Image 1 (cartoon, rainbow, N blue to C red):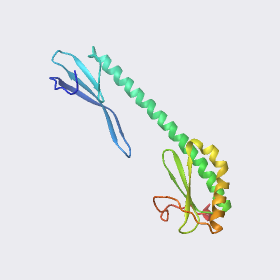
Image 2: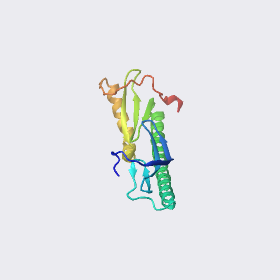
Image 3: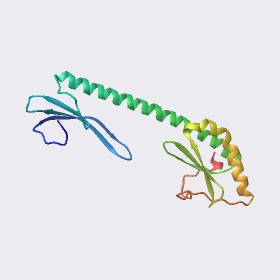
Image 4: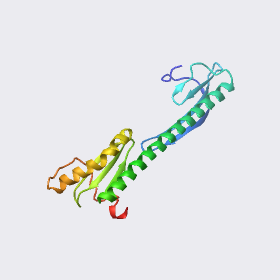
Length: 180
């Protein structure tokens, strides 16, 4: 049976096995059961049809249980990855807070899936950003103070530079070194 051709199947039921929503899309995974004129039960899981007809209801239960177990494993792996990412963010921020307090500068941060963007305020209108990839944060952290000091010294000597930041950080949540 092809999905593109009309069939004379009777729709039996639909089970919502997974519902996930995030910022970019909302996804639902359904299990559909169809009864054909030849008295065969077929299963669609999401958009994929089973290769053969279902011989008994135990097969449907087994498919459902296997799918739900896989979803649980994926959720556990995602939670573990998020926990690791959170620990990396905390380590980076602890180091940045220490440097900011000792070297007296304000900063802001932005986090995405692969990096932390550290924005250092040079003046009311000038700032620069350092991108710290999570995969390389152990290599970057020891060099961070030196990099920040060199850029601040260069700026303070009168040299101006321009970056290609897409948005202004005047309204960002700045962490003031006096507050640390």
